[in-house]
Amino acid sequence: MAIADPWTPSSWRSLPALQQPGWPDPAAVELVKERLRQLPPLVFAGEARALRRSLGEAVEGRAFLLQAGDCAESFRDVSAVAIRERLKVLLQMSAVLTYGATLPVVKVGRIAGQFTKPRSSLTEWIGGVEVPSFRGHAIHSDEATPEARVPDPERMVQAYYQAVSTLNLLRAFTKGGFADLTQVHTWNQEFVTSSLEGRRYEGIANEIGRALRFMQAIGIDLGDERSIHEVDVWTSHEALLLDYEEPLVRRDSTTGDWYACSAHFLWVGERTRQLDGAHVEFLTGVENPVGAKVGPATTGDELVALCERLNPDRIPGRLTLVTRLGADRVLDVLPPLVRAVRESEIPVLWACDPMHANTFVTPSGHKTRRFDDVLREIEGFFAAHREVGSWPGGVHLEITGEDVTECLGGSEEVLEEQLDHRYETLCDPRLNARQSIGLAFNVAELMRAP
Image (cartoon, rainbow, N blue to C red):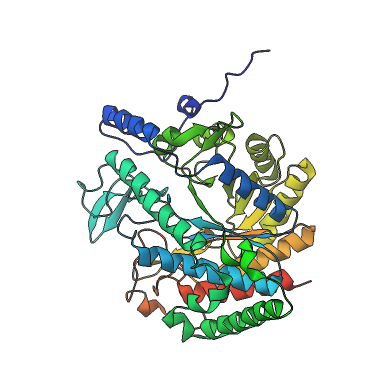
């Protein structure tokens, strides 16, 4: 029997790689990749292992995954204020989920690397002009001209430094006092405080404050409790642009294993998860926790084969399956997939992406989602898992800390005619802060349900 060649960060190059840019100058790409190889890692192997342990707890039903953030990060949004507002909503949602369901929440941001997006068409029409589809700031500009959409490998270096800046701010905020649970009241934005969601959140903040004061009153020293004063917020993005991912792989000095050091958690998308494709091959060789998006056409056999490829050693926390099935189909499609994977005895964490299969275009040309459809898919996700007897372990959301008008509905309903007010996304519509926190309350209720 032939012995397979050992995996290397470039093993993917022998396989078909979909959704990659057509770089006009391959030599320039190689120069950029060499520069990236010489730069320090963005994250460390020990951090990735810690996240995998936390996700392993979620596999067993002892924690819940909240993975959320921007659809596509912008090179223009690396200010301290923009990053703080995104983090603030993530912390608020986590507080709602933890308090409401009394479970630890594993917080993973779509942040510090989500600079590329797969697209279903090579071109798009903007203002009556056909231009190459926007694929993310790590590849080209979002300016709607043919010249601006030419792939530029130098943007991969800029993506790296943007990620460095974002990570520095995240670490400062999460370890430097901003995320301290005693400051839970300060996380309320003005436009959330004035809303129904904000008033509900304020009630939880008051209860958390009372609980902390009670612990102090009975003599518990909260000063030494790291979990009260600091939080872990891990980074993630889709491992789409392989020319960026490959040079950021490093071999861990303590274990000798390969780790992708562009983020703590990487996932493969619905369009690029072919078993014999480059993206799956790349993820098989890194020891990070990884994810795979799962669409409604997936069969049980296909999914089990994918699980075998991505988690052959059956490590809890290694693999997260992120289902994107649609509000109208989740109850029919999900149970047989869960049963098939359970019968394979491969441990996976199931998470629900209720955004991507519920997208549509309005007559005015805006791509949008209805809050009610997002919630219906999550409700169906929980119901399907309860039918099978498995744990609905997380949600994967596209959100922002800004008061945008991109998704319809919510308690203070965004109407179709209001989409133009603040439609700011680079690609897909995101839930605003009010909608995000409202959804967290809904998910907490589902987690509590028998």
